[in-house]
Every structure is written in structure tokens, then in C-alpha cells.
Image (cartoon, rainbow over all chains, first blue to last red):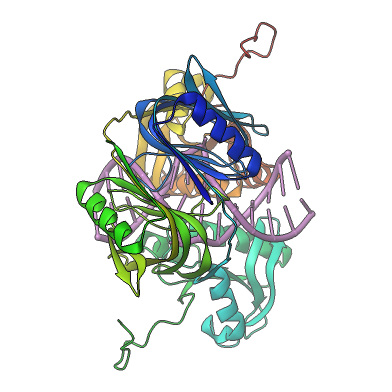
Length: 250
Length: 250
DNA sequence: AGATTCATGTCGCTA
DNA sequence: TAGCGACGTGAATCT
């Protein structure tokens, strides 16, 4: 039996299941009317309402309402959660240090508590990341510009690590900043920061900077132009051929 | 009855409950062995495994494993999710446009399906945000420096909106960038961007920039110094008095 | 543990 | 709708 469920349990029965499940490393969900108090990097208070609470065996706790992707409250992995009954009500407390953070969920009503055994796993395979864009450019540096020769990735500078560092056709240092999607002003600032740091390393060598991304906003384009930086359009994965024959839709 | 639960249901029975719950605007959880395919801003494939799937009435869908705060796969609010049975297996598909994204969850085994009615709500009250820091400084501008006079918040510039714009004791323009927590290099770049934009607006008036945050990293401190920018330490909420008497622990 | 950056970031606001 | 920046960002990587 991989799922144990209590329907409208007493708070004490719920506590018993929670303690058992926490001990077994099972994942738990609770649904009911509760309040939530959080104190740590910030501080928050959530009045009574119907929520889905998820406790994971790695110490994660999530409090979900019926909207939004983000939990209304949570605690990250590595926390220790403990359940107790105070004044006849179930309470789940999750704590951690560095930084010190505490989350308290107090239930007024409990509709359902379930414990799940998770045994089967598979890893996620994802494509379309900045890493894919980097690989694409290392495979074909001409995508950046004719004659570009990559020399290093994640090269350290006084301002932080440069995505791709290399030389242009004339042998001048070239700083390439990659973004997997359309970028705003912060990307231009980031590139500028790296270029200035590299420029300090190679004075009078005419260090250049190129931002590689699918596209840029107008303001970002202006910021790049002002600072003498370039933009080259490229995507993490080659676009589907727009010219005829691209009939792979289902 | 605010919760309906099916234990080890047939895929057709699960489908019936899902369609009913989607129609009623109820929140749904499913637990079982499934695979997940995603295609949109990126692309991913997740092999078979035991997961908790949450469907919210606002169109959010979450696929959680037994670890991490982040779902392994998801779809944001505003998506339309549809359930069906193909080859005797339950499938939940969630789609949206702008950008075009599709998520497919296919179940091999179904341990439990639950539908929850969410009626009771309360809003979250949170303190310790950048907004709190701003209010603190507007209440007492001397926290930035003696003689500082705020003139505007979110003031627009060619490089974006400045958190607090004002004048120093000598009447020179002052750009203040706020951060609720310890900052890295990007904050220095951001401030510099704003200062340069304001400097272009007020040539030869000696525009100054001050970063206000709890603390900065060493490298960020150097970047600020290089560019003639300042740092002032301040937190969103006044720190507890470290000197004696702070005995509120439980 | 701290620093740095990417992310299918998410979310809210505003022009 | 797109642009822009905050977020209790989270998560990975490297020192």
C-alpha cells in the first residue's frame, strides 16, 4: 500500500500519521482550514483559509492556495518539520538555521491527510538552456562573428565570470555574454561590467563585447550602442525552418 | 462535502472526477506513476516515476517529486487543462499561448485522485520587503545621509526607474537604489546605469549614487568604489536591540 | 558557508 | 501586451 489517507481525521489521528510518515520518509499532503506564520528573512502572517499543505521528506514544506504557481508560504529543503497537537489542533512547525527561519501551520479544520510512498524516479532531461546556446556557439563560433576563436568559458574576471572569452579575427579580446531569451537592460550592464574588467587586464588592446540572445528590447539596444557593445541574434536551439516543409505539428 | 477522493481508481473513474472538478473550479491532486513531456520556452522530458500532480482552478499545474521546492514540471496560471483517457491511461494536458506551451502528464498507475473545494480565503501580510525599506527611508531620509531630501520615488530615467530620487545637502541630484538584502555585483551595475542616465539629464551638476542595503559583497564594494558610488547600510526593518533585554525567544 | 549567476524563473506594475 | 525590476526568489556551481 503506497498511499495512506485519513478523511476528516481527528487532529490526534492526523498527528499519528504525520509522525509515522515523517519517520518513514514519506511525502505528506494535508488539506484544511489553517493559519500560517512565518519568520525569517522576512516575516509574514496568513489568516484562516483553505489550503493544501505538502511536506516532503527532504524537509521542504509548501502551502498552496487554489491559485498561483508559487506557494503562499513555504520552507526550503533541509528544514526539520515537526508536528504536534496544541489545544486540540494540529500544528506543523518547520525550522532551519542559516538563516534562522520558522514556519508554523495551525489547522482549525482538517479535511484530509495523505501519506505517499515515493519509490520510482527518473531524471528530467531539458533542452533550450543557456548551456545549449553555449554549446551551439562553441560548435560554430561564426554564429557570433566570422573569425571568432573561443579561448575559454566561464573565464574569471574582476567583475565575475565571462560566458565565452576569446579573440576576434584581428586577435583582439572578445567578451561574449549569452542569454537564452529576449533580454532587458541588466544584460547590457552585465556585459559592460565584464568588458571593462577585461579591458583593465588588456589595456589598449581594444577589448570588444558581444551580447548573444534571441532579441533585445529597444532601450537595451540603445544602452548597448551607447557603450560600444554589439548584439548578435541567436537562439539556444535552431529555429524550425519557416520556409515550407515544417509540418511536424500534431 | 469539500473533499472527494478516489483510491486506486480506474483511469476512467479518475477522468470523470477530473472533468467534474475542472468544471466546478475545484483544486485537484493526483498521485501515481507518470511521465511528463513539456514543450514551450524550453523543452523537457521526464521518464516514469511517482509524482504528486496538482491542478488549480486558475489553470496552474504542478508536478512535484518528493524533493525540492520547485516542481519538476509545471504550467503557469491561465492555462487550460484537459483530461482524457488514451489507451486506457489517464492523460492531463495543459496548454497556453503567448508563449505557446504544452504540458502532457501520462499516468501509468493511479494511486489516488482528490478534488478539494476551496472557499475560505485570507490575504498574506508580509513585512521586510524593499517597500518597507523605502518607507523607512522616506520617514527618516537622514538614514541615507544628513541633509538628503527625497523628491520622487520610481522616477523614470532613460535607463529605467530610480527607487528614490532627490537632492543632497548641497542641492546635488542624488540617486538611491534600495535592496532588501545583501547585494552582489548586479546591484552596483544597476545603480551605475541609473546614475549615468540622470547625469546625462543634469550635466555638470555632480550627480551622486548611493546603494542602500543591509550589506554588500567584497567585489561589489570594489565595483562601487571604482565607479565613485557609495554604500549605506540599512535594513528593511530596524534590527532588534542586540544590547541586553532581547529575551523574546520561546 | 558565502559568492555568483541562470531560470520553462514567477509575479506585479505600468505605459 | 510588452517592458522592467523585485522576490522570503530557488538551484547549481565553485571557492
